[in-house]
Each structure stands twice: as structure tokens, then as C-alpha cells.
Image 1 (tube, rainbow, N blue to C red):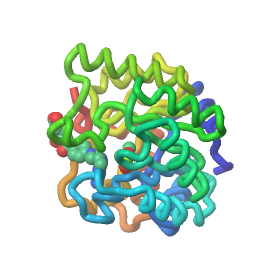
Image 2: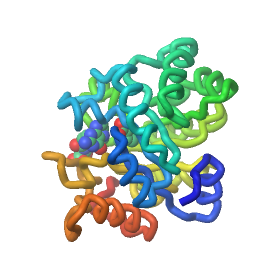
Image 3: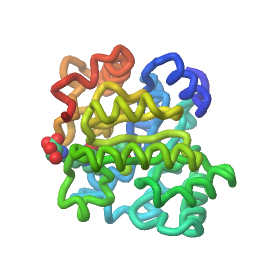
Image 4: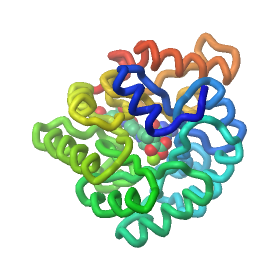
Length: 263
Ligand SMILES: Nc1nc(=O)c2c([nH]1)NC[C@@H]1CN(c3ccc(C(=O)N[C@@H](CCC(=O)O)C(=O)O)cc3)CN21
Ligand SMILES: CC(C)C(=O)C(=O)O
Ligand SMILES: [Mg+2]
């Protein structure tokens, strides 16, 4: 795989070729994920749950994210490296600029933030200064306490309309990518077709331009997993085999299937 850039992903969207994202939090797994052919790697704040044992992503700090981003960056892969901005580290444009800089200096090539319209000013400020942005809409896990649990979003016409409006707004503000999490497949497909920027789905059906899963989930290591997870170790005898199976399933369109999708 040649070095992946935003332009690689835009070209793949134009050709309707699915691309792949997997989370990684250290150098060893980052190398394996990239060698399996994942175009993008996400240092997700899900590390608060799968590495640190918290029951949400809320306790994760910018220092935690910078540490794991630096670990992943040392793998020097050809995948595009995206890092999550953790809870409450991007409440104003100035605070966002400061904290995004820490993750870029740790080795990220793009930062991800949860939110829509309210992020516009911060997104344009980052993008104008050279920091590419991925936005994240739908079930935004940092808002778990506001949602009252990890619940599917966008099921009412009003919610669906608001997620679409947020998506258009963050694209206009200059975001390069969008993650849609746990929304009905039809809504995710509609948003993906209306946007020019590539859309990465998780629990958002097969109609997005790409798929992402948490590493530990696809390796069958998580005790309880949501509906959208498939254990790719099944039928494989190595981590490398499972990662290759995930990449192949996304690219061929066999994952996600109906059973992994919300209506
Ligand atoms: N290991 C792990 N995997 C993830 O996908 C993940 C994390 N951690 N941490 C951050 C968030 C939290 N996520 C979650 C967690 C639980 C559900 C869940 O249980 N969903 C219900 C849907 C309930 C409904 O219908 O509203 C399900 O049964 O699938 C979904 C997303 C996704 N992210
Ligand atoms: C599940 C993905 C999209 C994420 O934000 C994370 O791993 O933190
Ligand atoms: Mg996250």
C-alpha cells in the first residue's frame, strides 16, 4: 500500500471503492492493522474502555491521547493516522487549536471531534492553519450521559434532519472526513451520497464509503459487544488473519450485513 492521503480516500469514494479504518493504540497493532491493508488508523478515545477499563470515554485525557498517538506514530505505517480529541478538550476554538496541536505533534495526521454545527468555527480555524479534521455524528459516545446510554440516534424524522444538517455544515466548514455511528442504515446512506467528503460508518450500515471497528471488538476480545460488531477471529488462526478478513469483508461489501445494521 502506498502512503495514504486525504486525496487517496477522495479518489476511492469517487470510484465507489470501500476503504477501511481500524483503531490501534500501540506500535505493534498499528503495524499489523496497516499491513492488513487498512487505509486509515484511528487512535480512538475508546482506549478509555478497552485499555483503561472505564465504562465510557469521558475520563480520557489529552495526555492519554498524545501518549497513544505517539506510540502508534512510531510504527511509521503508510495508513493515514487519525487521533480522537477527548472529552471537553475542544470547547472553544482556542482550546481546540491548542489541544489539536498536541496530537499533531505526537504524530497524528488528522484529528477527530464529536459534534456538528457548534464545531464549525473550530473546524475552519484548524483547517485554515493546516490541521485536517474528521467530524463524528450520530451516537457520539462522549455525550453518553446526555443520551442516557449508548443509544441509536437519528430514528425520528427530526433527529435525522438534524444529523444531515450537521453533516452538511461540517463539510462546509472544511472537514475532510465524517464518522457516522449507530444511526439507521438508510439515513447513513443518504448522508454519504449527499456529501462530497468520505463517510466512515460504525453501526451505520453498508451504504457509507468506509467502515471502522474497534480493534478489540473485531478480534473477539470484548466481553459485551453491540449489534454492529462481528468477531473476525472466527475461522482464523491469527490476529493477522482476522485483520485481513475484516479488510476483505469491508472491501467486498460482505460486512456489515443486515444483522449488524440498525433500522
Ligand atoms: N469496545 C468498544 N467498541 C465500540 O464500538 C465503542 C467503544 N468501545 N467505546 C466507545 C463507543 C461506545 N460504543 C457503543 C457501545 C454500546 C452500544 C450498544 O450497546 N448499542 C445497542 C443499541 C441500543 C439501541 O437500540 O438504542 C446495541 O444493542 O447494539 C453501541 C455503541 C461504540 N464505541
Ligand atoms: C469507534 C470509533 C469511531 C471511535 O471514535 C473510537 O474508537 O473512539
Ligand atoms: Mg472515539
